[in-house]
Amino acid sequence: MNLVSFTAGEKALWGVTAGDGVLALSPEFPEFPTLRDVIAAQAIPQVLGAAQGRAASHAAGSFALQIPIPNPEKIICVGVNFPERNAEYKDGKDAPANMSLFPRFARGFSGHGAALIRPPESEQLDYEGEIAVVIGKPGRRIAESEALSHIAGLTLCNEGTIRDWVRHAKFNVTQGKNWDRSGAMGPWLVPFTDPAQILDVAIETRVNGELRQSDRTGRMLFPVARQIAYISTFTTLVPGDIIVTGTPTGAGARFEPPIWLKPGDVVEVSAEGIGMLCNEVADE
Image (cartoon, rainbow, N blue to C red):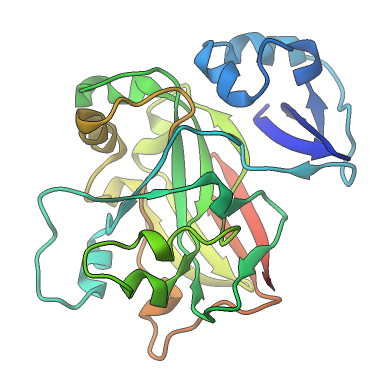
């Protein structure tokens, strides 16, 4: 079972996967309005236990998946985190000693199956397939050796980017990374129980069935444990915070000429042990 946030009609709910459907558990746990509250209370085992042996409350087609954590305090993204990604920049510089970071806002993401939105201001919508980790245990200055114990779960992210807007200023990319519904996250949150779930797993991105990105987390320049340790040095990580861990080489901007996403394109991000996040592109 994996944890899900979803809507049915106008109602926001959370629960678990159950076959092709979902089982709503939020009505049984009113003390936990969202999955962020479940995580903060260290109650994942409790809610999974409550779901054992039960059938779906909502059949496939009767609900829409949302991003797993609808209200994170912060989403922090790690840039240029695979060896060939640094070479893609063609600036003659070695990989830096410290990781590049930037913020994203929850409003910038759609759930699994929902549209990725290309805005009228730019045709340069690009994909970036990534694994995202959700923090379960709070901490500041977390030791790298203890970092993975602070993870509650894993999900997938298409860290959609409006490429020309990341070049509007000299030192930041924030405005190119935060267009409403330009990215996606989901489809669910896989509970984290074993370091093997993140240490060396395959991640791939396909566009219209064509493989565009493929790598393994074991090749990250800055592994997830180091990410958690480094980020928690300057900011307290709290339950529900999301770290988007970095994308492999092969984004559309790196082709010659670039290949931008257009309406009707289907982007699939998959990773071992997590599943597949799928979204179709549409114009705003």
